[in-house]
Amino acid sequence: MANNYLEFSEVLPKLTPEEEAWLQEQLQTVHVFDDRQYTEEELPEELNSADADWFGIRAWADLDPRPDYGDEFGFCCAFDDGAECPGTGWGRHLWFYTDEWGYPELVAHLVRKFLKRFRPEECWTLSYGVTCSKPRVGEFGGGAVFVTADAVEYFSDGDFLEKAREAFERAKQPDREPTTERRFVLYDFDSGDLASTRVYDDAQEAAMDADLLDNVMVVGFTLEHTPGASNTEKKGA
Image (cartoon, rainbow, N blue to C red):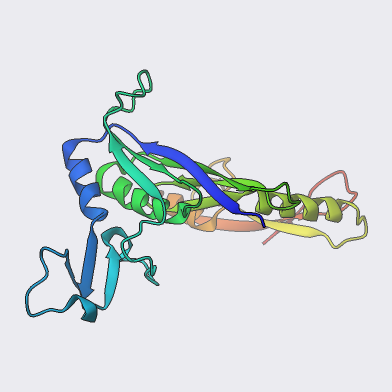
């Protein structure tokens, strides 16, 4: 019999007393009744904990669906003053780690909320490894998580390998259909020419820049990539 593990170790550094107090609160276990949250000590006498709509870690109460882990975090964590890690510059920090298995998505959810509240201009990353107690083929891998105040992005070796295989197979098919991509530019009606030389990949971004200028509109066009062709053909929209 073999055991599988998903392991990581990362810190949220340089915590202020206010940030640590917020994190401590987020890591509390709460009983949820409708939209009210109570710790065990705060639970009113007229409420029975067994009747709670949900019981778990406060940080996960806004997830949909809420995880059914009870008072388990889904990973290990500890606050530390960094004395045992001199030279790192971490200072007071929260250490996220695993003994055998953890859920990076739960760590990322907490950190995203933390960044949104305290450090909206910063980002945070976590790398993880997937291993097996026996050298079974296909049981090893890993990935990474990139967190900002607005979003969480996940990257895995499986996704990379799948895309690489698809690209490899497409390259072996010279008779495949042409592929197209949309691009956008800004047209100035006053000058009768382009408002700038920038070519946009995203129509919304182009529209936002056009709103900042007078009498300018967004014009889209298609780039067609023909297999085996040396030049890229452009077709106006």
